Each structure stands twice: as structure tokens, then as C-alpha cells.
Image 1 (cartoon, rainbow, N blue to C red):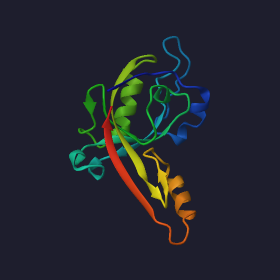
Image 2 (cartoon, rainbow, N blue to C red):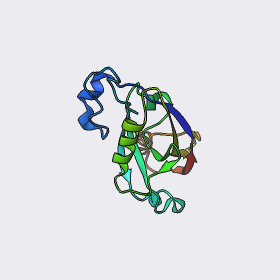
Image 3 (tube, rainbow, N blue to C red):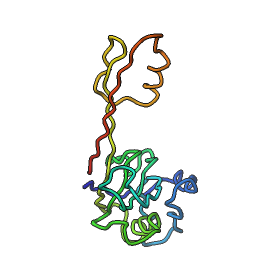
Image 4 (cartoon, rainbow, N blue to C red):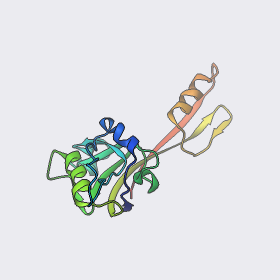
Length: 170
């Protein structure tokens, strides 16, 4: 479980909020609370996570393709590619409006500075192998690095590559 504190967003987030599913987070200035909480992620609903692994067949979640720079999400370690499975002990199984439920929960049930407990599924890939005599370390490589290796492959040169996919629940 990850514990996050919700921070108020900056005006720039409001200006680009149409690109994010958490919209209308700005409220008119008033005496009680001039801002609404904002986690700082772009959200894509996933209605069946079975494509990841059979143990997640029929499970719903929220994929996070983008984490906003200097947001609460970034500060507490949410990464692009993470999938939110639960929030404060609640899951997304009851509704098809996954994003709306989560967004409304943050906006209506939380205040700026409140903690939120998230259960996150993280997919890690590691690569190892060799290009001719050169060993590729067992470190995570970006896809463009693999493409770069393939482009530089010499005629008759062997490339052996192992790709290991691991799931981690945080």
C-alpha cells in the first residue's frame, strides 16, 4: 500500500486540465476551501486486467500513463505504467464509471493534505543477454535501446535477449 498526501494543484494544471480526466478541480475562491484536492495523474479505466495475468481476470483498475511533474503522485512514487487497484480499501468492481468514482472520491471525500491509501500494480521488465561477445547487463533497458541494438547488429552477429516480466503490488 502506498500512502499519499493530496496537494493543491498549481494554476498551470487548471490550464491543461482538459488533457486530464480530473477536470473541474478549480472552484471559485471562498472562505472554506479555495481549491480541491488533485492527485496529479492522467487516468485510463481498465475494465479487465486479465491481459496482464490470469490472476487479474475480471479485475478493474485505473492505468496511469502520465504522472504530472511535481504533483503529489510523483512525490510519493507513482510511475507512468502503474495501475491503481484500490483506494482507501475500496475497489472499482461495483461500477463501470471507474474514473468518475475515483475522481469524485478525491474531490468530495478528501481535503488537501489528507492521506489516501492506494494499492498499485507495477509491471517491471528486465532484459539480459548478449550481442556477439558483449554482455547486456541484467538492468532494465528502454525499448529504444533494444531498437538501437538491433539497428547496430552486424551481418551474421548473434543477439540473444531474455525479457523477464515481473508484477509487483505496492
